[in-house]
Each structure stands twice: as structure tokens, then as C-alpha cells.
Length: 237
Ligand SMILES: [Zn+2]
Ligand SMILES: [Zn+2]
Image (tube, rainbow, N blue to C red; front, side):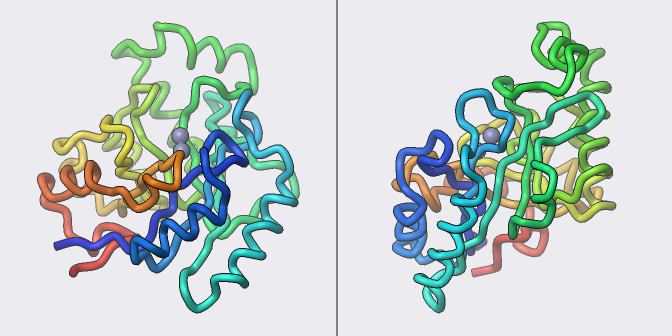
């Protein structure tokens, strides 16, 4: 049996989640988790971005103190992939300000340049030939930025997950097995595991009720025969 010890992918009203940060912390505590991360959408998302990063970090640090000894609260942000060159939307001066960082592709991000927007948004980018270029953008992002996790790989943009896993294994970046998005298949998990990459399981909860809901991700983990040692936020139970 595998037990997920922390939910590091949860959204709040700071982006488009339904609950407050404290609602998510309480929900995680009730589920018996040892840690929870607040990981709202990054700064270039056109609709659901963290508007006031200082307030965001301050609120998390207050919760860390309030819940110390009961549950560990991490500050995190779900950054956006902005360009074919692997640019992300961490604001200057905030590198290293978060306990954890992750990035993913979101089609409603303000892309860095017209060429990237064109590539990312047009149906052409969904074709087989585009997979190589899409993957290169992810790999470049992993190389250029210090990121702990990649959220929902394959969601919204087809990529070669094994090629990405090889790059992530070298950089120590974990690939998320997301309970909300099923794009990371059992076959792909098995192939990626061979690269030595680490995985992270996330609920991607947008409401406090879904915090700690890992069922759909765990089903794929078991089917792929992964062990807790391959998952950064899990242990054998
Ligand atoms: Zn996302
Ligand atoms: Zn998310």
C-alpha cells in the first residue's frame, strides 16, 4: 500500500479555487496529511492569477505559524509555460521565494511572444510533428528554471513524456500524477519510471472537499506498479 503524505497541488480563492487557504489547510489536516501546499495559478494566467504575491506569501506564512506542529504548510505556485524557449512566469525577484514551484501548460496564459502563442494555440500544435517541439519547450523550461514539479504533463498540449522524464531525472524535477487530469497513462508511467525520474501525486483540488483526493492518481500508480520510493510525497503504509 502507498500512502500519500502531502497534497502539494491545491487552489484557493487567490486563483480560481473555491475555498480560502485556511479551508485547504483544515481539509488536509482532517484527512490526516502531514503537509499541504497552496499552489495557485502563476502570474501570467489571463484570468486566474495570483494578484498580490506579497499578500499571498504573507498569508501562507501566518498559516505556517498557526498550524505549526499539526501540519506543514508550503508556499507554492503553479507557473505557466510561456514560450517555445521554456520561459516561465516567475516575477523577477521572486525566484526562491516559494517553498515549492511547479509549472504546467495552460492555454489561457499570456504567452511570451506571438510565435509561441501561435504554436501553442493552433490545432497544428496538437499534431504528431508538433510533439517534438512541444517537448523541447518543456525540456528547455526544466533546464532554464529551478522547478520542483511539472503539473499534469500532457494536459492541453501533447508531449513525449519519456523524453521529458529523462531531462527531469537529471534536474531532480518530479512529474506529477494528477488526480484530476488523466493524460498521464499507465503505459507512460511505466516507461517514464525506467528513466529514474521521481513522481509526485497531486489532487489539483479547486475546492477544500477535494484536498487529499488522490484516488484516480493512485489507481494508475498501482496499475503501473510504482513504489512509494519513486514518489516524492508518498510512503509505504
Ligand atoms: Zn494546471
Ligand atoms: Zn492546478
